[in-house]
Length: 580
Image (cartoon, rainbow, N blue to C red; front, top):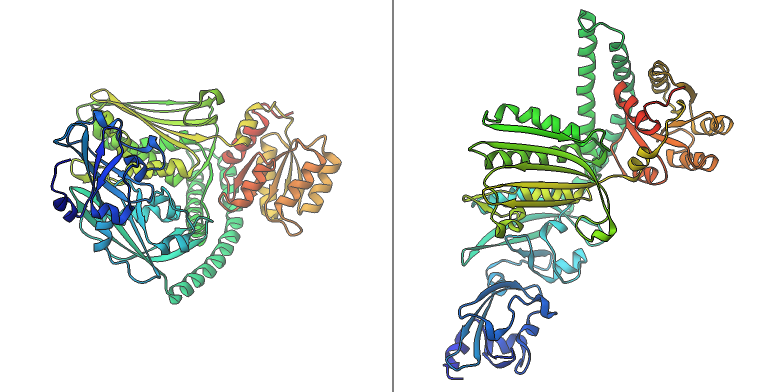
């Protein structure tokens, strides 16, 4: 082949002369230094483990000037181009290793620092050895958000947005290792532009011992705060329980009703403060609870109603009744709020916004995403300008640019779906509109509650708080239930053993003086495997509650509670016609 070999040998690129069968005939010195003697080997095998991963098809059909971007089998980020040779049947390939070039300009620091370089889509294309040693991941494809503790992802994307705009500073971030160990780092971000494409570098320096000591002190303070908040919750049970109980007896037009309503609202405010205290004190716990998506939809529509122009029509198609899901109401509200704002922005000339909830079952044989199972689907549909087909996959990228603005919203919406064990699906046609669907798995105990026949309505309450027992008894007796009371686990189990044929549901406190809720649940199930159990707790969804739900409990009520919350939870399990 006739070309200036010395010229190509001086280039800081990988250069290959390839025949029509895809085999390397010649390589320049840079390629030989990095890859060894590759003559006679298939070009694709130098960069990919499998032929299907290669972005080019048949070499003899490639048009001149074809170009690609890809991540090779070592995790390096390459740009490549094919040039037709003057001699028929030969092709000249030029590749630039962007990762190598970027690392030259990024300070790696000492061995204690982790360096991570990632693309606009969040794909990690380079890490130094300290990353693998400390976090334990194997070499292969990783996404930046997968190594960040879920509770810190919003902070990370906020700082990333500032970095892209030219700002940013050091901040503290928690990374999670492959075994879910958590490590604290001081992090700095740098944005580099190469051929109009952004590559991001993140340098992580492990927290000093003083920072770690402070973190331990905060954790200790958190335990104290959590304990105090739990006690305050028990006090609020009486206040909220009795105020909601009294309101059912008082005429709404009286001054007394207004006073009781004010007490209830004040107690609700205190309850929200306690929730925040527990959430802060339990920053490593997922603040999940049972959530009704229909309520989330109604709240967001009320919030945005004032921003919706008169030429936009709103349609709500909410399934009723609908199962609860296990999730974070705060994160779910954020996700729906962002999807609603996106839809409204796409319909500046008017249109229809449709928000829908539905229950679906995906069968095994369908072999699609989401996988087989039962789901609540939340969909937001607009009749706006739509998304070009080649941009649909890109819109969930953390760095997707729309009209020169960088939005992280859909990235976080996608993260919310995954964090809830669900899936995100986007369908769109230009000039017709877009529909975004979030799939959330329905907990097994919720599905079981749909199948239950109406029960007789006799309830055993096992709780060491006399105030909680008294409030629940009054609420339930008024609803027509017969109620049995037990102040501890031992007496509750014994009472159930004697009256199991009469008791249809047990309301079980998770913390008792003589045993924990899990132990009592096991004993109750040993007496009657089909017993219905509702967990009573002052905490958000945690591992203990999940274990009890997986062991056969049908639901849980968080203290303090309102009359309607108690009634609806029991009706979901026993059926609306369960009283005798």
